[in-house]
Image (cartoon, rainbow, N blue to C red; front, side, top):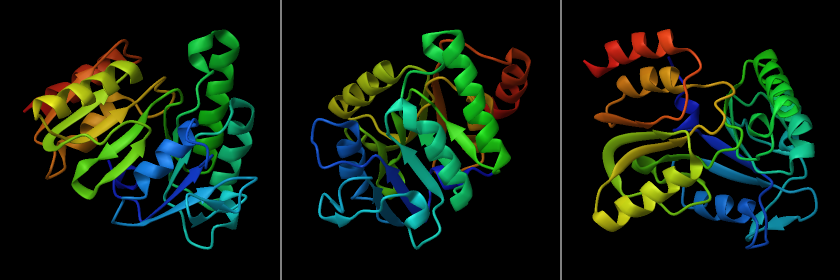
Length: 229
């Protein structure tokens, strides 16, 4: 299963990138400015320059192809943002914005709509309600938390707060991660698919999971059996 575009994208759009240090979009873009394997474009409807970089009003205005979109906009704009990403040909989107499936039935319905939109355009999703993703081997930190140390353990966490806490603790203890994935509500990509991907990479020697719930137990057990070998 090839979802390289989440971890080795040639171009990333941060939709909701901000100049306001109190906003998550500020931290995400600040962290991604260090990414060395591709270009990072800020998207902001108001500001023409974000953190010294030329910004675009819409992901569709970016002159380059975009593999990965990090979505940090208020909830009411997420659906249209995802449609814009689909029309742009974005392959993967990480939705950091919260307020979906974790809030109850209405939120779950809206979350299913997001997945339908994504799949209509052949796009995959991580999140919503997540911290983001990290690949320490190419300095890609598409989250709003500090950089993890470089290592060979891939860590996938359902809880953003606990995942962040573990990243901070491992930095202090000198333990390294190869990748960190905060899956949030797991509306689309789940543990099983991420395990399949991580099992086939060079840099991920072990996979650690923090699980709160599994949607498809049988699929998870089957994949875990194969992957743990």
